[in-house]
Image (cartoon, rainbow, N blue to C red; front, side, top):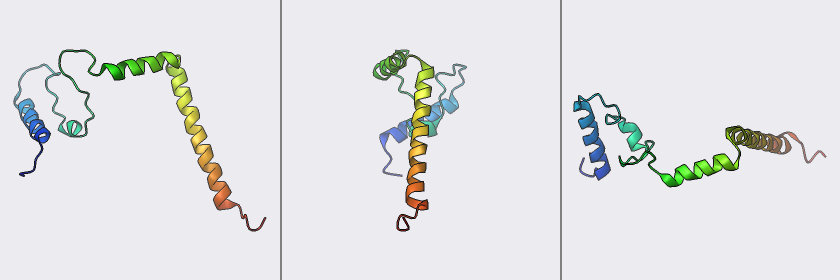
Length: 102
């Protein structure tokens, strides 16, 4: 394949290195090529405990702003219930009511 991108070549090299590695350190043996392709793994430059401080501080601020995980989950549940009610009501109004007969 001639049109391979540089990141795909690096991922393939990392996978080969991880297969050949015999060290017991599990942090250096990330062989999940599929996850690396989908960009689901966090960036890790190797020098910090948190790879993206902006995302970390934003999530920390949201946690304290909403006063904990309970209210965050509650808000998400209420939003989902509201969405499903709106969809159900729209379906009933447009599909099951005979507007011409009224």
